[in-house]
Image 1 (cartoon, protein in one colour):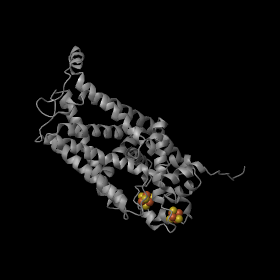
Image 2 (tube, helix red, strand yellow):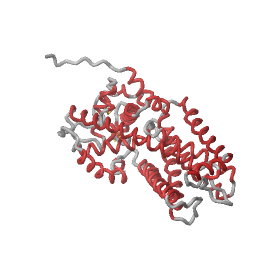
Image 3 (cartoon, helix red, strand yellow):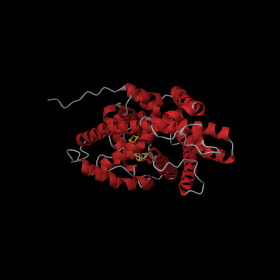
Image 4 (cartoon, helix red, strand yellow):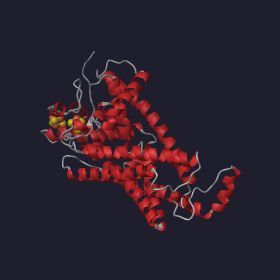
Length: 391
Ligand code: SF4
Ligand code: SF4
């Protein structure tokens, strides 16, 4: 039997990577400096040199199913030291984005999120939807009160005699929009991750990166629990040198999201279980958490943008600006909504709240397709690496 293989370069995939910021990948002459320089790469079959070789041939299947691409934290140490300026850190970032697109369904949404020409539609669709909900909230209050009362439910969640956003966008409508979206996102991620874990395991077996022959759910979940503190403390980020300062901004954004998730969950229970409508007092500790999280989100996102603009060794493309824009917009519109409400500017506050809802829609509905999905894929890949003893 012949031991020779014919490899046909996938030019379309190479072009795709180049468009996503990996335009330097062909400069690599495979010296392996990057794999030695990487503070995170395992000793057995280290990255990113092998990924650079696969990328130069456009071996898409081999790359998107490679769990190692997610162990990279885009610190840029390797790009700094690469003698050819091939920027392996940026190449891995581009590969990761193609993996997100590969695993997420439906494909047309993944294509829409990566296309700047589709951005006006991604904004206009939720914009029109929430404008319609505002129109119904303000004009059909009596009708909705009657409909809801037949089910024994109170329609209005708005406070009286003060600015309450629920009087402009019914809380019911807002939650009836976001709860199904959140459910769909969870389903999409569950299906994507099932295929993803199967593929990275097969890849690890094929490349001799693990001695595990199958994935045992209990062991995998134990590994997941073990890596969560590593993710929360950004331990891997902290091993980097070139862009070590990015860890602070990244952590601020991560903890802001955790804070805002806790706030939203508490107010959801307070409203629907204990029937206490907002707006809630600024003296309420949950409000403190909301305000601190909002401020941290704005500061963290601003630092991340500043960092990207200031780093010449870090390439940024639309996929990066799209998600950074959403994160910053989420924080800014959230804080301004609150500030204008407290200042008594009802019209301005309602308008900014509308922008805030559009931003939340973009963040949640397109989460499995945007770069933000890296949080889920990287955590899963790190759990797999722990499970597979890939160190
Ligand atoms: S990316 Fe740069 S450092 Fe890495 S193998 Fe290629 S030339 Fe060498
Ligand atoms: S960007 Fe950093 S973590 Fe990623 S391969 Fe290069 S050195 Fe390693």
